[in-house]
Length: 343
Length: 275
Image (cartoon, rainbow over all chains, first blue to last red; front, side, top):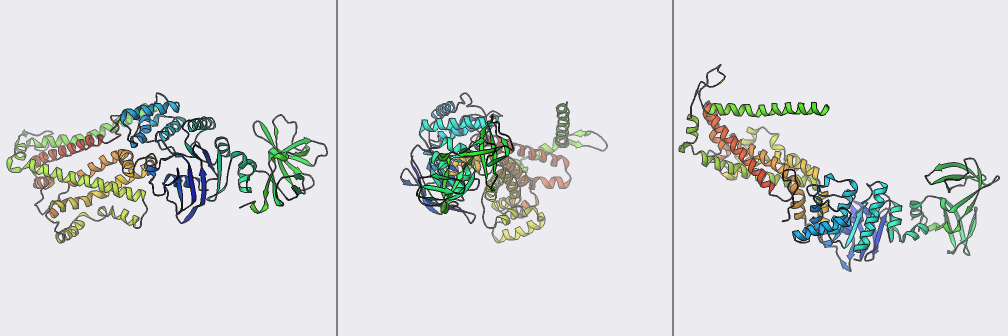
């Protein structure tokens, strides 16, 4: 179901946590709320679910304003970070609980619970007690229980953050599989940019209680609106310059760009720099840091104090102290207008 | 090896505890049937059924007093656990003005000496026409039992918190159903303890019951204590045994009733409760 947030503001303990949030999620869309801890992501999720009242604005679900609808009637189900399985119930009782609240008879509940357990690949676990389960299994039960509530909007509050990397990948795949099967409008709260980039149709980047940018993963990564968004995905070096007649001019380089005239900052991420070993090269390799399947090279310009970083494959012959020349991949350069550089 | 040793130690403690509980009961049992027990005999010299006959004699009105006493203390225990649970919930899950004061007041009756407290409350109850009434006795017993109930339920409510109810809420349960299906089953151990504690405290009140009840409200303690004070050990022991059994009966009933609540652990095996 389509969800729209109109001008939502929330104050908690006299502190403004959310500031005029506007967001529209299409029916069946998967979006992520991405941002650092404390930026208001979870508060926004709880506001959507009706657990926190907004000071201003409206939550619109399927075209209807649901500000006065209590949380238990909204069908906006949260899977919390700590999962919150009911400790006094078996796996099937946990999954059946929302079905019971929907008024489904006991045979129907049992049947649906077993069906959902199959969907989350936990067939045969129905009569197991939850304290006997592993972290990954608990995640799956929490997901099955949320699906049992037949949510209009599924809200995932950093649900995978407690899992190790392999289990997290498995859960991400499972969630996407089920989200597509059930076509549920889903909002994932995460601080993990990779999770947001790989799972979402769109990402809403939050900072300091506001949405800085709401765009597709590709656009938000390649065309960040300001330095806050840009830095969150990948740090790099900023070079100041001007764009005049579709040409960026700086002390380091010039490049043709299809942008309006004005002052800009050009972000050079490590992935935008290719290096060539050269005896009289302009840069010296100050540090070489192992990163698994690649190395991060820290480069110092020999004539100025300009510092750049580059990523090279792990079989590179370049060592610390080598002199190199750089080549910029102009498609990977990011231009941010100075006036928006840090909103 | 370590486990074996710690198990052995636990068993020793278990047997010591069992001994501490059972020895006084055996002594009470012996005294109930004792006619003469001169010092330094280890066992009574002569036995008799005098105490039993007197306790069950029609003029003693044992069953009438026992029944009304049990009912009164049970009412106190149930009210105490309800008020205690709600107070604990308010103190734990909500923020409001005067929260700390209410938390302090909830344990105040235990801070003031009982006699001083009783005299003060007697005057107030006379003004409120609650003296010499069952309601007055229930109210005054509640004042004594509530600090224990609040304390037990507060600790448990704190450990459960509001997180699970919040989850139930977003899964479609109303606040009332969230409490009934999620928090209440988890509170059952505390409810049982609280009822037991409040019942024992209430049924054991002699002075305050006599003062506020004015002799008109007869409880088992009011009936029993004069015999103990008089030094009739056989009769006192007989009454004490009956008192103990009645308390045990209430604890068993409480246990059975709470097992009927939804989602209760049935002998270690969690069962389906579809209703």
